[in-house]
Length: 251
Image (tube, rainbow, N blue to C red; front, side, top):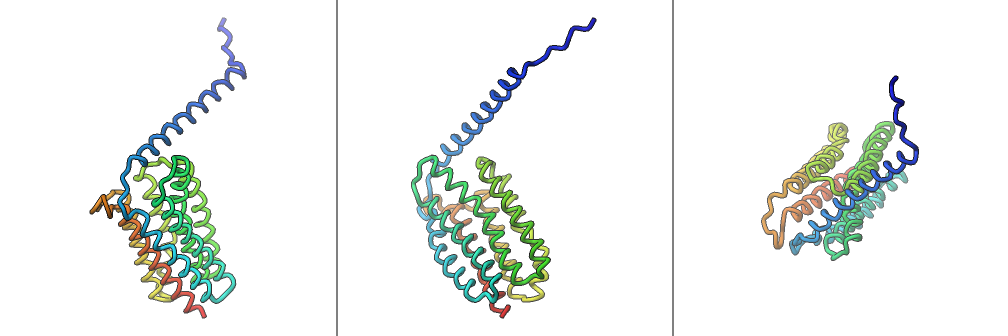
């Protein structure tokens, strides 16, 4: 006769699940401590955060100008979304990079800083879609982008220790998600199309520099991260100009 199969009691199973959960939590805490120790050991260039601090008024007043000149209630709401996401991007980045934060505060600000990249991308497409696309096209594009932005924010919030080689391509891929509509915008208003492309090139170049950490001309004053920030501002400025042109043309 075959021996009866050994049965595992529910209590034993539950204990194993709890032990596995505790082990996962311990591994995650260990990874976070390692990441924080790396951040604490970094020597920041003296200009770290100042460029984005200077860009905050650009986002505020440029966004306000866009709201004022937008022709409809819907386009004004879309412009306000762009303004808010821009202020979040530059404001959070400036606060995070300029301050001296304890470990927990640093981790929270870092999560917000990285999550804002998804928000500014979706926030930029929002007034573009409202101003320059047909209603059905705008609804489709913005539904996809804001859904992807929510997933991206969750990804960067949960997997804060993910390596650069993983999340930089995610940022770039998300940023070019609406590229299929650019020829339509270019044909409608060439200046808008050119500014969108120029801004996208700045953003992608900045992401690549951030990913490979080169060039790094002056670790004491102006490192690769500062070049990334400068290119982010250039990209934002191009897209703000594109939106102002599109809003003015919509009258």
